[in-house]
Amino acid sequence: MEESGSQSVVEVLLATYNGEQFLREQIDSILAQDYPNIRTLVRDDGSSDGTVTILNEYAVKYPDRFRVMPPSPGAGSAKDNFLLLMKASTAEYICFSDQDDVWLPDKVTRTKQVMDQLESQWTSDIPLLVFTDLQVVDEQLRVLHNSLWEHENIKPERIHRLPWLLTQNLVTGCTVMLNRRLLELASNMPSDALMHDHWIALLAASMGQSGFVNAQTILYRQHKRNVTGATKKTATTPLQYLQQRVRRSKLRETQWQTSQRQAQALLRTHNAQLSAKNRHVIEAYQPSGTVRTRISRLAALIRFGYRIGVKSNLGMAFDVLTMKPPQ
Image (cartoon, rainbow, N blue to C red; front, side):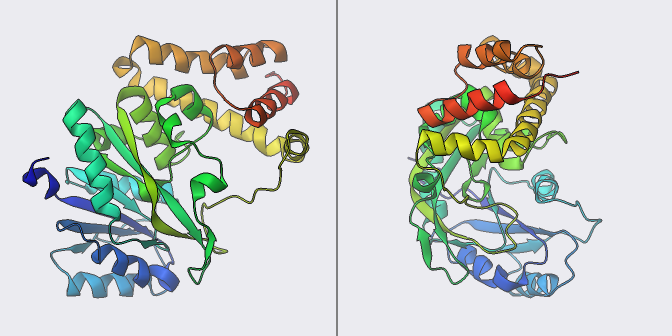
């Protein structure tokens, strides 16, 4: 690995909104990274607490390392806040940061090492993504789950399976690093994208390459104001899993519909850039929600292997068979 590659600028995109309670800890953990060439770009989405005051203090104290974007109308969501940051970034590599976590000191270094390995194999002209595991903690940083991947049964190697990613995101945005090529693709994010991290994972799976760090690099803080976070697992057997699905059937139907709109947006936005194989996989996902018979819907999903595992497949079958056909 060349020395110059390891010293490339990594820009951290920090999106804030009424985050004064934990913000200083997060910023301090970014500034304390052992990677030598980090800068932070921040956009606040119209906070009414002391967030902006805190950001301006750091901007004055670290003018070469910490920059706050000028005030602008609120984007209204974390996804759109990050999108505006992505469009403003000029770095070759970027990471996303939430406002309430704590990064372990070697997070950026370890992630960049995997990025360098991907570039050695695929070159920087390919859209590249790296993500990591997280340690789930409470408000006081006491460990709740040592591994988010283990807690939520996330298999990071499935990042290479586009059919899986169409139905379930594996990537937690605050762990991500992407290269310039992927950033350019992701900056054209449509409104039907569910979240920035899911959209970016789909882009990498369909048009690029991905890698992961099989270690926890972030203390992922859970509190009552989280926009997203670790889920609470209660089902332990296939029967319990199906019972849980019954209770959540309406929510699941909405999730299916939104994931299919996201797949349609991927085709619409990047159709010309997709390989024939990946275009076929994405197109095959569409009939699962549009054909008239439930059995046909299920057959389409099974044929293309959209899910893996007993509980996941049982849940998928329940969703599809109970979902109302379109009118």
